[in-house]
Image 1 (tube, rainbow, N blue to C red):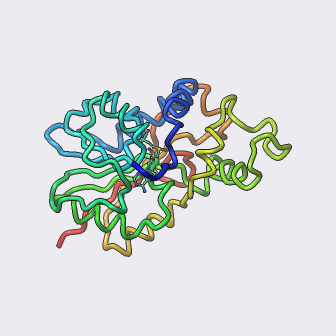
Image 2 (image 1 turned 180 degrees about the horizontal axis):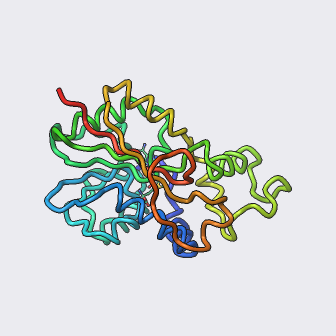
Length: 236
Ligand SMILES: C[S@@+](CC[C@H](N)C(=O)[O-])C[C@H]1O[C@@H](n2cnc3c(N)ncnc32)[C@H](O)[C@@H]1O
């Protein structure tokens, strides 16, 4: 691939961050599994599948992946994801009527213009299919922390002293994020005709305490540091 992608060179650091923040990872994994639900007999597309870290904890034999970073995608392939394209979702024509579930686990946060991207995903879903978006909301403490780190260009600042996780999310990855709010994504989906939503959340404590123990998933989206939006494809 000729263009350097945001996650090139960070595959090892990305996985290591979750491995070191094991309780936080378990909380996010619970949210991921709750949002996907029972996937037996279903066909799924993971947009921005990364290294397939979350998928390595489920049966991913029916999960296709799209990933711009070859560094990340090669690991996902080893973990059992079938990569349908190395590239950006903006440049991929997803075959129509193909998937039961299309999901973005943390990837929407790196995409600026969400409307055309979600529009093509809704078109590629079968009737009754679901578009699932999991992200750190911009309005959450994690979101504010990442945007503050981004604007200061460092975590090593008095404003952030004593409030970070022991090992914070790599600054370069926080800084390359766009960080959308949940309401913004709901608004985009409503403009695309989505009427039925379900919301789940986790990481409801302040960030520095989120790796103390795993958290159970709760309904809603107004207090989570990691939030799932489940959008039902509108009937035609
Ligand atoms: C936070 S990581 C999440 C990776 C993986 N889904 C996971 O849960 O571990 C975000 C991923 O989105 C990918 N990404 C960034 N921009 C993208 C785009 N425009 N289209 C598709 N994927 C993108 C990145 O390469 C990266 O792998």
